[in-house]
Image 1 (tube, rainbow, N blue to C red):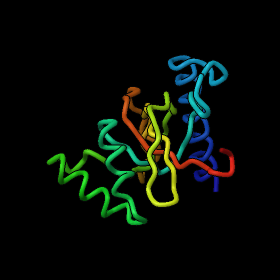
Image 2: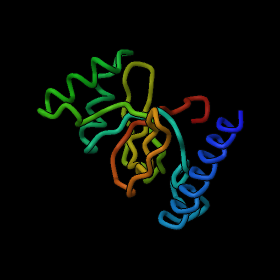
Image 3: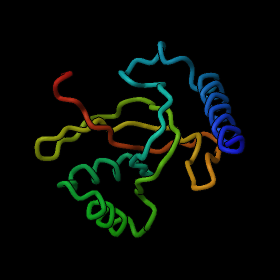
Length: 140
């Protein structure tokens, strides 16, 4: 039980450190001009190398994310052009929006600051990628 508690505390401390570092690097969320920009988030997220790939993913998405990923990655001749992976990231600026069926997505810059692995969180130098965040139409 002590080992589990120690691991949980270690994870919390790492996440807190990452949040502090990201705030120092990216500035406080209150200064962000876009809704959600500057927030530190943890989750399984679409991560694409380019803005075009994120837009293309949304255009292809019809409920099957794996199928859309396969097509984008094949078009780019890069098996890792877009991936869906568990990460710690900060939301950057909104670059546009894209619609597929009844869903709308904001295409945004994201800054990956950590990757969640089976061994815990692995921090990385902040790196810019692109993603698609679903828009809650009730808030529009």
